[in-house]
Length: 323
Picture (cartoon, rainbow, N blue to C red):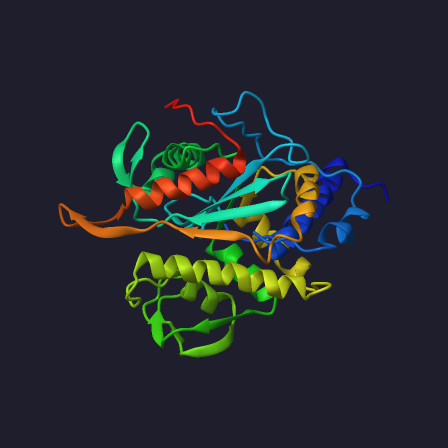
């Protein structure tokens, strides 16, 4: 029987998301993961894979970057959305920079309640940018804050996060203290995690990464736990040669993940495989602040300036205001 054009397109799309899922398992973030062999495992099966997502070229760039030749950045956004539309507030915001000459990676986690200037909207919580203006405004806000271009993005919601962690068979972390937290459906006290080193499934890992109120360090503590989750997934992904549950979750991930990374872009990330275990991570320090009864995280100028300069130096980028 001759395969219809529609069926060919569907199969091609499923192959693309099979690739993206593999990369996300070893290159997470929102959250990133990449290990040796992950590209080779699928590349021999896929001759031509193209991205359906629109190309994004930062207003800070005169032309698009080539990851094989240029330094570049990737913005990871975790969206509090379950509909598959990937709308709503961004619960996790992580920016990673890549230096092609050094083969090195640096990453900063931006607290979601950070009090920043949102272009065209004034000062507000940074996670509101996405609900105001979607991906475009989120990118502009991060660029304005860190003074570097956002070249690529990966956006996913809780559903994709949970299913990717479960596909890995869970991740191992060291829970610092016992606490309860809501699950991905916001049911109060649905998840209880006990102090000590243990393996967490997808729902538990999400609760571990989201929890803030029980942590005496607040946003700083949550940022540290999010980075611990990233490292745990990297270590788990590096130890796994194959995943057998792709077909069970492909359709869900296809609805709950969006990226402008093409197959060619993903292949170029292979050169950073030796950096994933030792990449530099940064946390933005700040203070608790209330305005009109609303909580904000007031970023410390000195801490912000230090991180900005490190990222700009890493990208070898000279800032020029544009918004």
